[in-house]
Length: 466
Image (cartoon, rainbow, N blue to C red; front, top):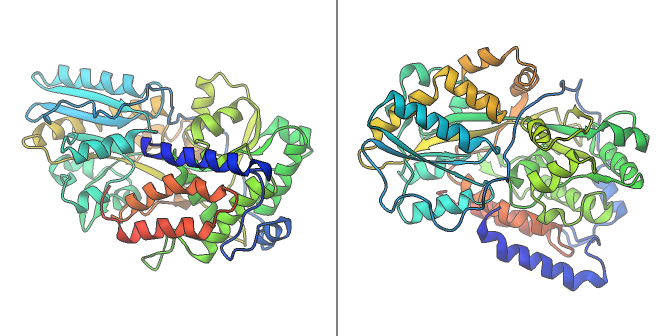
């Protein structure tokens, strides 16, 4: 996902080249060193139990698009951070229209507030972590940043608390679960921007051709379905473990096997249950061989969502924003949506992803930032952002405004069973960054899956910053 991964990806390609004689799809060892084979992979799914109830209705939405010019190593901000009446805004490109939305909003804000100026910079999600890291290292802090984390910067004293930036009307409008997930050590530093959920997307036409009559509810059923899909000439399951948001894909498999990021407030990334989950992903790629080639190097949007939209893949873990991407790509795929398959009788759940707006402490910027944020969260402006980008609301007023919209209502109903990243822990940004850089290496033949998760565990326990 980021520039820092280029060397890693080169190493992965080199490893596959060296191992070409034995095949890069060969089984690898488990944490104990025993090679993963058909029997050991089948054993992982032997405790599978039936999944959850009825599937949600087919939704709409948008997503993080990669159709934005790749960002360079330059920050794109003025050499000196702006203050006073000028605001530097940096955000991620959710869709091809994200930049147009923010520039339009900036124009409306400037018209309503003469003398104020908003500079908009939108960055590809493949590059935003690296770009923001460069800004922070060079102390060219954006006045307002749209990101999916905040606690590390809060722990380092770089952010302004939210109560100094938004009115009580805005502050009290957030849905409680989202607001509670925006605090660090008793103070709120993140403004909940958007939410999204995840579910299993499956191609109905491919299922019919493969003779599959219903979506899988367990890991064992998913493997069986993926094998039938492969035999019918398609990719059984699209597995994205490349750098773009692979913490989402990983969380789904980890949680669906009863694991978690933390246990009793202690990091548990490398637990036995989580190692088993990562071994299962290696089984999908290297033993069952039902994924696309090189899933460890495959990014989500172009590498998995697009092939699914093109009718090449039977199943993916889709997001509430994916359907709008399909529309942008003029996809005609007939798909269904089902609960996430589980293992060992795990209770049904969905991944709730929450992104934030934060403000860095630049001299004299508080008054201008406050005006801009309060302007953005006016219901009409905020709802326009949600409907243009396809994400779920984090405020009560926007939820009420969208509750009867067919593209949003089904996913609003999923939020009560949502599980979230441990983003309020300042160790999470380091854990996330290490996972994004290293997770794909676990699918390299010969990889020790536990050692990969041990690296993430170490980063989490030592991390304190973004």
